Image (cartoon, rainbow, N blue to C red; front, top):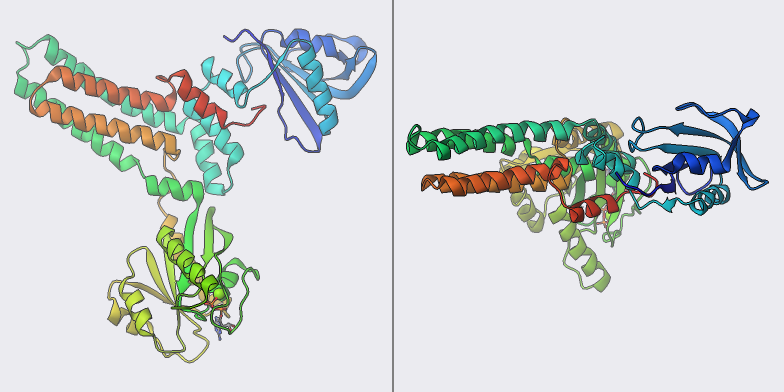
Length: 447
Ligand SMILES: Nc1nc2c(ncn2[C@@H]2O[C@H](COP(=O)(O)OP(=O)(O)OP(=O)(O)O)[C@@H](O)[C@H]2O)c(=O)[nH]1
Ligand SMILES: [Mg+2]
């Protein structure tokens, strides 16, 4: 247990109806007693809100509510006091200063949650879940954070760790009783178990899916000038985000907008039309377009359906892969270019016909974008730090498999132990101070 008592403003620093100052540690009750005077002078009851005043000597600082939560039934498992003042920056700081002047120390970012972890109330992945929940920008990211906060990632890791303990026990038996278990028998059984565990971990780790949950889907519109990229961006986002004119080369820079489909953030990027140009500004724009295309989860090659494709466009169509869709635009005009023509140039390509002028025609396109994110809704592991740890665990298991080929059980035992340590980093069962500092430094103060 930490001996010092920490305090911080737990609510956002701006103006609000209510602001909360939180104190945690063995001196919490004494500090609250020093500065808070319950109305009617009655003693405070554990876990009951009490109306009263914060006083600085004889001076009223604020009329407010306060609550005490005695250890261990509190967020940090320590004695906790919370004061609900009016939510003005000035009053909140005044109350915080009072707490500090009575012996509390200003909390570090995430320190309350760190204490909850260190005192065994939650594991490290749950602590991170709390922070993700606060920081979530999309609904799916938020849902993933709730699953994590409720122990989803931890449950997954504990299951993997249990399976690994079984293998470690099997190997230990081989090492301790060599006359009873033959090398081939031991190695064979262990190899089978290892392969099963590696397969299971591989299947559960979906870095791409995790990135879609955390960052949303990056969709880039690209193609020839005047094909209607900016018009499509505007039509998809439902607002006049990008300038549209009939002058080729209207868009010079990257323009971004965001929509939400099925709870996923879809980040739409409009780019400068691709063409050879002597204009230095447009040249830079074209380079940026190409970079945006490369970074896209989904690249939409926009084609003007009211005219024949150029040689350059034919080449672009031939290069489309499974991350791309050919979008034939301007279906409200004469259909010179059809899906069949595009498929002749690239038989495997996904192709769709739309009009930026007709909202209804965009539905199939939106459905195609949706299909990108189907199936990643219930991932157990979505935090990059966790995926990295699982990857390292898999690498150690692969090492163990290799050492078994030459039957070096002691070396295999070391590899399995290293895999176990990697798994333990996720839940915080095996962590050092440095890792904890890194994890909690990204938290907000007061959480
Ligand atoms: N009829 C019709 N016209 C369209 C459609 N989409 C775009 N346009 C017109 O095509 C012209 C070019 O549209 P933009 O959206 O600016 O084209 P762009 O691809 O962004 O062009 P650059 O920024 O120059 O690369 C404008 O006059 C639009 O009004 C469509 O679906 N139907
Ligand atoms: Mg444009």
